Length: 122
Image (cartoon, rainbow, N blue to C red; front, top):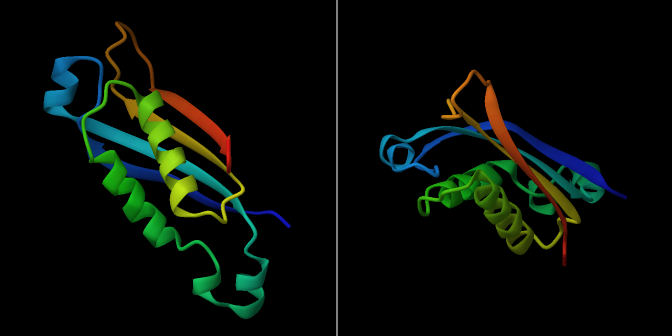
């Protein structure tokens, strides 16, 4: 059985970007994570120890977002996906989306988003 745990719009202030100014001033980044796993036993027993604790997932993502300055949100999304797959072997598949607002593109845009989808072991 496959179930999904979703974290939506997790917000972080960090210092990523291709321009030096972005890395110095920083900005708001948002992340969505879809964790495909089997939590049927945890649900049946109402036991947090038998599932993936989303509070711990948020804290782990926060630590990854602040590890070092990156140029690309594509890299950040990949680091988050790879890190969660390694930390939680019970994840069957993961989708990570990272959004960045106020992007210097020379025009009006709401945000830019990069998405990574991976399966455990791949």
